[in-house]
Length: 283
Image 1 (cartoon, rainbow, N blue to C red):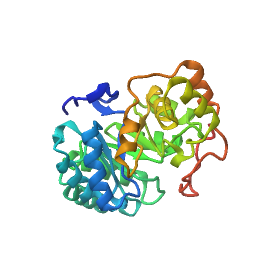
Image 2: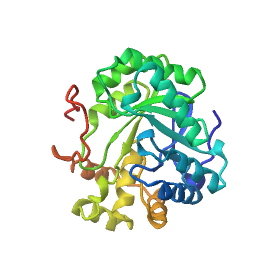
Image 3: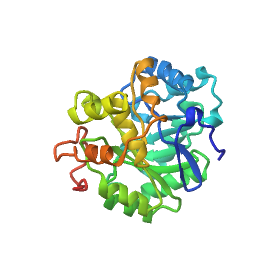
Image 4: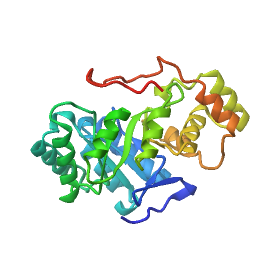
């Protein structure tokens, strides 16, 4: 795996020998035309990490956007996800091949989108590892797995699960899951890192933003990056994508980081689609 060039001093994590840019561009809920346009724009701005999923129905458009951008494929970290209806051995391998064909590229990272009791974790993790062995992805990981299932999945996986992509923003505490990721030699990727716009008028973040001369969104993203978390904000506006990217030339101090952490609340979760078979960590 090549070491990715990171323009504008972008930060990156090294997980299991892989270099993953910490700030990515997400494509959840983007219609194909917007996904193609914004992926190209994001890469021109300087993003080098693109996130999609089979269930988003925009993988082909994401691939087109990468080609439109003119940025070399080897300079981009590309993630997609296996949908829960494809967790049996044969269905997972078939979708992994379909996703690679739709993208027009082998993804760098293939995730299981949500945990499911059936089929068994053994079958699904075995198939996910087989997809890696067959060259359908360069690495594998999870999405939306609580700590207990995260540990169980890693115990069943021959390869390192390099990230667990979950909802994370200032209204949520993720202490247990972040500690689990660190213990497993993995990482956390934050979806909805701006709390779907809800941080825009939050007084604590507004005060900190004024102090550092930045926007609320930039402060929230910087807070995540300084924790060693990967963040994948999404937008349909090139100007907002550029604003989100401009977070690598300032830092929050310890007090500012702590004040944002203190904003977490029990009702802070925005996208709770976890099956009743599982429970989120309490902290």
